[in-house]
Amino acid sequence: MTHYEELAKHLTERSEEICADNECTEDEHNCDSYAYMQVTSRGCIDGKERIDAMLLTVCCSDYFQGSAKEYIALPLPFTGDAKALKAAVEEEWLSLA
Picture 1 (cartoon, one colour):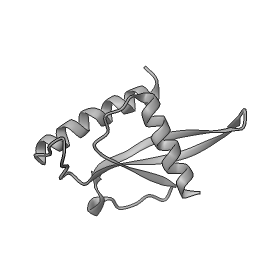
Picture 2 (picture 1 turned 30 degrees about the vertical axis):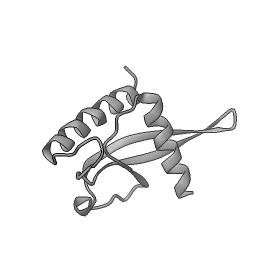
Picture 3 (picture 1 turned 180 degrees about the vertical axis):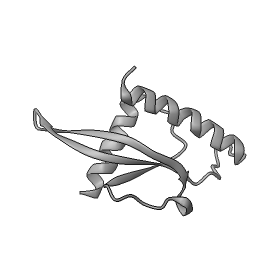
């Protein structure tokens, strides 16, 4: 299992737990939780930037204390696969540039 596959599985499971705890429905989410990830660029291959993401924590925005490293915040719930997670990480990272 690749890093992004493991991370996507973990975020999907945590999203389900958080939504259950907050009594979310398919139409309304009350969780206001995010996956905070440290992002590192590993250079370019064929003109496309390679990005690694390491999960820092999953919590409400009120509780995140920040990071000395560059990071992104992906809103939960997350229900995608590794490809969707990688695309979301890249999109969020590039929006900060």
